Image (cartoon, rainbow over all chains, first blue to last red; front, top):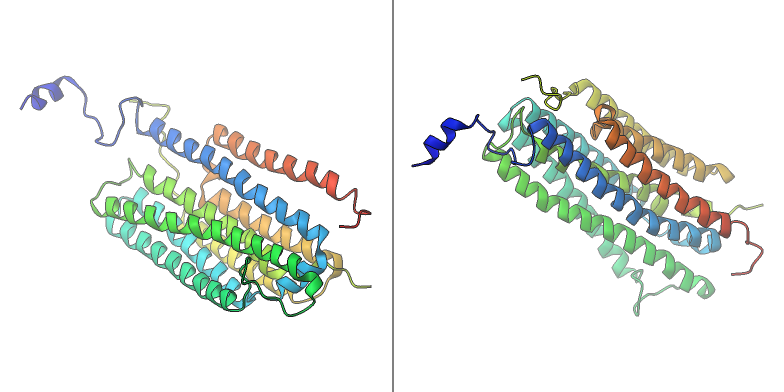
Amino acid sequence: MSDVTLQADEHVHHPFLQHHFEDLGQQHEASTLGMWMFLATEILFFGGVLMAYWVYRVIYPEAWAVAGEQQNTLFGGINTLVLIVSSLTMACAVRAAQLGSRRGTVALLVATLFFGTVFLGIKSYEYHAHWQEGLFPGLHFTWNEDPQLAPKVQLFMVFYWGLTGLHAAHMVIGVGLLLWIISRAWRGHFGPEYYSPVEVMGLYWHFVDIVWIFLFPFLYLIPHFGVHHG
Amino acid sequence: MADAHAAPHQITPLRTYFVVFAALAIGTLLTWYASTINLGAFNTPIALVIATTKAVLVILFFMHVIHSSRLTWVVIIASFFWLAMLFVLTFADYLTRLWQIY
């Protein structure tokens, strides 16, 4: 094979060092910066929807108050804690990769995958309950209390399903990415020199966690505090 | 091979991760507890402050931004600055014409 003679001329390259980078450090820097560029667009993407949510909360405080009472704060709270645990295991997975522990990286990534799936499971249970209560916006939306508030409560539900749906879609994508990173970690691709994919996976996962950190109070805890009595 | 780029990456001590995790869990319980008492106009700001604090902790420590390059900081600060403009300019409108009946 001619590869052998070729390699004799060149200095040894790390198998995952792309040729347009000088070294792995520069490549790592470019990867994380690129991910943050993407996350900047995500911040503005979620930010735009959240801002629309706040505008309508200011305009229809009474509807937001009664709609917020339809939420199960216990499930929302448990899910918040589940996501925080998954962020901890994700952060520890990056650390395990940095320390060159293949088994540790795989185990912690699988734990992250597990907690992410638990979150989606609890969320789908909530979705099912809301669906049965007729709280999905559209033809089958039912509101038996004050009929004047019905369209505005429905608007709250548009934001509830839209925001949590976008978040859940990001979780599903995250679960898919995790499966890929787990298979790479299993094959021993990562170590102290090269762990950028695990780090970038972590950035995405933590970002999705941050979105939920805001969605939980906005959609579950404080909608009914928009109305000031007396 | 004294490469400027190949500086050894910071490995965060496990202790830091667990302290941040504990702070996030406490913050979650705190924001839940605060929502069970009626503090009038203060409920919303309290929830916002707790959520923002939690987000900053995640960004700085879990996302390693505390050790990141200045360029990364510029990207992050710029994105939140843009988000702030979106909110400030929009609410400068909506909050100043509430006499309208919607």
